[in-house]
Length: 328
Image (cartoon, rainbow, N blue to C red; front, side, top):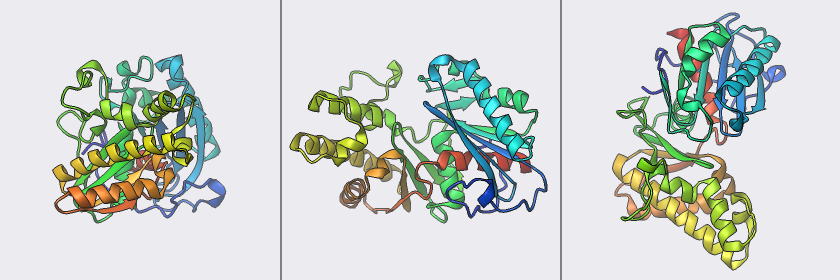
């Protein structure tokens, strides 16, 4: 199972808090007494943190900038300072820590995460254990952790197999089979952002390039919009525009994305697909395109639903990892 490089596999009780409320709105501590669990979601632009009790009451949250260009040591220091401050307000210290981020998090570093300088050399679990003073640490990929959150507490509960697709700045999936999130031989299962777009794709994984993600992920959409429209346009604004060039490009993006989600479903034969990530904010056009392609292309079309944790699933997953680490 991907989520617990150093954690056990006992599932936490379901949190009733879908939106990570602050302490004033959180339930009081129950099982686990004074234990404080720290969840950390390390993104390319921001680091989200949350502290909870073992029974799922969220006592506080915070967000700080990642500062990816500052390098790994500065990021770790910023993360540790924010974590300790949040724990202090929540009555810490940390009993267990769960952390997630982009790429494949291994004991000796992080693979497939080129956007943070020096991150490939970071022994993340060891760093967190040292900085927070606990051996109870679990780390994993952010999308797989979000899939774990959906599997335990969200839209994939009871689905076997189930697929969580994260559609935003990055493009990836978490595949859940038999109650577990599939890791793959190297921890890279579900990385369909590396899908080839054409038979003669000039750049691919060997070049450190993810063809599909660069075409239909958030940054890729913005680059394509600039080339077509001649002005900077975010993905969200592209889909809100009604002029013909913008509508054509939006349709091309949705058609290509839907094709690759359908191909993934043909391979996996899931019972249910949950879609999350920033692109789900465009709403009906995305789900209409996905539904149409799934119905037309997949031999047994799966149920399609919005993810319960549309944009904060990775942080919910990080807390689930911390719970596993505490209980292991």
